[in-house]
Image 1 (cartoon, rainbow, N blue to C red):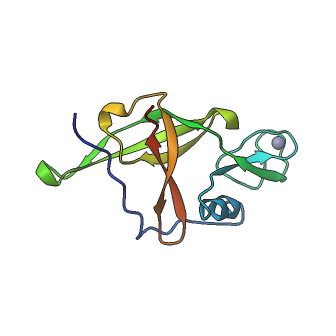
Image 2: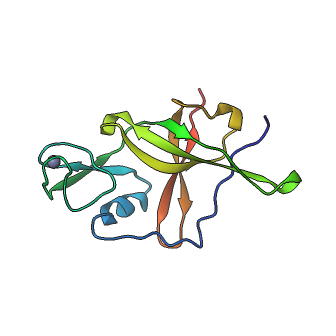
Length: 140
Ligand SMILES: [Zn+2]
C-alpha cells in the first residue's frame, strides 16, 4: 500500500481550554508533552479534571509523557481517486505514564508501517488557539 497518512488541518478548530487543561496546552506551546499525575497518590489521570479518581485529591503535577506506542488505530479515507486523503486517528499509550492513552493523529506515515505496538515520536499541528500533539511512527 503506497498511501501515506495525511496531516489533518486543525487551523479552523478552537481547542476548549480550562484551568485544568491549561498546563497541558502551555507545555505543548513549547513543544513538550506533559501528562497530569496526582501529587498525592501518583496515579496518572486523563482527561485532566478537578479530582483524582483514585484518592479525590486536587493536587496535580505535570510530568513528561515518556515514549508512546500505538494502542489502537483506524484508517479513514476522505475523497476518492487521485484527490483522496487518508487519516489515521489512534490511541497512543504511554507506558511510563501508567498506561495513559491519548487520542491523536498518526501523520506523514506510510500506512504499511502503522501497526499496534509501533513506537511513535512527537510531531505538532496547530489549531486556532493551541499547538496540538500528533505522532509519526519511529522507523529504525
Ligand atoms: Zn490521587
